[in-house]
Image 1 (cartoon, rainbow over the protein chains, first blue to last red):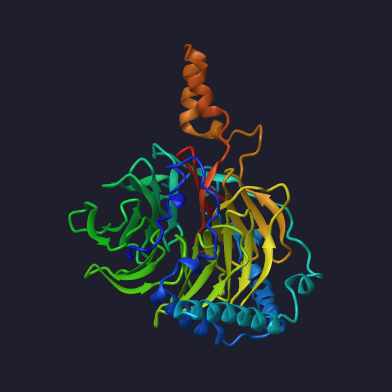
Image 2: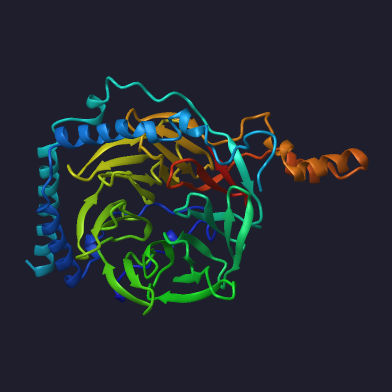
Amino acid sequence: MDSGRITQVSHYPLFLCCSKELPLDPTVMDEMDLPQMKKEVESLKYQLAFKREKSSKTVPDLVKWIEEGVPDDPFLNPELMKANPWVEKGKCTIL
Amino acid sequence: MGELEQLRQEAELLKKQIEEARKGVADTTLAELTSGIEVVGRVQMKTRRTLRGHLAKIYALHWSTDSRLMVSASQDGKLIVWDTYTTNKVNAIPLRSSWVMTCAYAPSGNFVACGGLDNMCSIYNLKTRDGNVKVSRELTAHSGYLSCCRFLNDNEIITSSGDTTCAVWDIETGTQKTVFMGHTGDCMSLAVSPDLNLFISGACDWSAKLWDLRDGNCRQTFIGHESDINAICFFPSGNAICTGSDDATCKLYDLRSDQELTSYSQESIICGITSISMSRSGRMILAGYDDFNCNIWDTLKAERIGECSSEPGHSDLIMEPLSILLFQVWTDCSLPPLLLSGVLAGHDNRVSCIGVNEDGMAAATGSWDSFLKIWN
């Protein structure tokens, strides 16, 4: 990869070091070089162009989706959990 | 003014404009819309199975699409494919590198994959003619650790890496078809949309990004977390995402209005989230924390409604054959009590990873103490 990039040693997984170090400062734009910065600007323009819908439309849709799905959610509908494959029905276990 | 400085200013301006655009569509809140909805009743999950076999901390698990088989990866350098109904080990796969951080089950059930500090994604064929599981490909190109991987199909897999990129690979040729660049910190986790057209990544730059698999573009970037995002999942409809962070909160982001809807946190919870999954309807969020607890949240009301933990005083181990044997040995002759107490007592479930299966019938947790548990 680019030689100018910072190696993020602080983010090696937990089993290598006792705890993660202080969070990375997100203003890493200061360390980007010209090609990276050009790509970042292009990406931001593309993301700005996204057609956002009003939350008064999208959030009720989300809530409705959940409410319609609850009857099919085994964690919330005990009827469905009656057919629990991890619980033996009757005295014998079918192997 | 140099070109670099101009670009930096342009980027700052664009970010401000994106924030303005978000505010422009924020004409309601989740809290307002759910004020009339009751909180889900307290959830009591019971351990249905304990899967024993690994010899060290479980790092990752992934359900098969059949909602019965599951693959787990452990620091002991093994992948184990489990039949969760019977607790039988279908496959025990020794890995070339024991520093594994992630594993994945192909939707077809034909392959599993894993990777970690070896910077590679290794693909294993479970259905070889002679019945022996074999490495079928080693995908090398990342210059950092492999934090997560997910199959799109038997020939395509998505990976996220500590080198800050994600990639889609053609497994047959072993090459990266598309590289997704844009994160400025290690990518820690990824999830694929239900329609397989998009995926999301969470990173150490405190942001989550939504990527288009067809054109390679970053469609949206979700900010708000105040530390690394370790865990990420799609809301089951594909229209929202859920993140878990070192800042001790989970957040729900709505894709269509491009904003954060709510945060799941409590003053008493001060440690990071390491894994996250949702129930089938999306009404519940199950999150694994750094203190090894697993909290269950009501997605709509942002309240904690339960946890996956063994009830104090109730030792479900008493019912299991191993402990019955040990108990008998203990009463017949003297065994060091320490040996016994390690098995019978203190089986707190210390969660390092979590996943709800496709039919929503169970949650699996992988534990620091090398066991996996199935709950419902």
